[in-house]
Image (cartoon, rainbow, N blue to C red):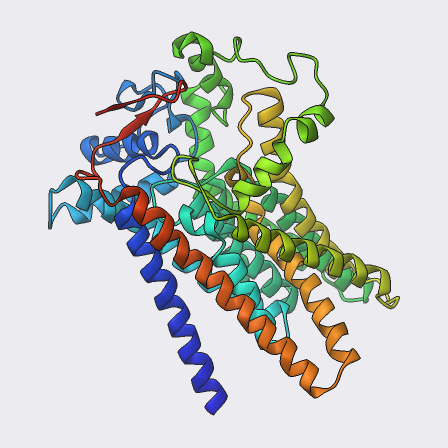
Length: 469
């Protein structure tokens, strides 16, 4: 009973902490100090003003530097933000207050994300301390925390990835019950309508779903009728919930269901000369190798750094010791993971478990490949936020490796050594939470405390100058 009460209070304390941090951060941040917030907000404003969804052609949401709009891409996050602001307009018409209310949609996604990560930790790890380490390292990563404080599509995508993984694990336990299939379909639909870089989880879902039934078949269970029935159920629900967007694109953009080809046509026509796709200097059109960009350009180091955290409009870096601390945790987790694979005793192959790990690896590789290829072939932008959909599976493997090392060290010592390791894990948890709090108090607040009107957008140009709107 005492343990239950303690754990409940810790849960409440954790959620109160992250909610407070995100609310303060969202309040501190002036308009458009989150990447692309201005372009996203134009979609929100259009929905509120006209009561309908914009097309990618709409001049009202056009960015004439880049020559395109985000209306070509899925806009479910902006639909939710518009709903929040529309409700807020019953109480206020103050510009920044309405912006803050719109940002609450991202904060809500963050809270749902944290809830599912907490639930995932219970399914993935036996040790209570390791569960908390997984939760804090995933939710309190500075770059992830930043994404939950302004208008974007990343926050909803992260929420969807955690939901998908949770229902995949639940499906492996209950052979994908009807309720699990429905929730998985909802999660997949949210993912599809939020962010293309998270689409690796669609492949992961197919792999885990198929692997679960293959394992049942291998054990001699009659399951293929169940497989088709539930597979079709998920597919139909996803087509109903998310397919309408691509049907709409098909008719609006002459068969371009993703809208990306049409977006490039518009960019070529309307963008500034230096930003037209045909004029951009890329590693690919200069004949340079992928290896050259990956290592000699500093791309990999920049992505790692900004995956941990580069805040504001990609201007405000963290303190050096924060990067070192996270990199050491990643390195130790990686070494522990490799050691666990090498030292693991041979076991009978479980197809479901194998498919889960394959799915997790795919979920890590796909956003990184898309991030890399965009920089290599389209526009050199080494930003870790483009790889952020991999956050949950990546942190799972990091923490799994750390857990293996801790377990081995605990076995090599006595009770006092085990207690010392437990204290060490708890201190790391506090350090991770402290880093997130530091970002708000010592980096964001000093950067923006003198801004008088936070509703005015600072528009950053490619030359690094800016104008006030």
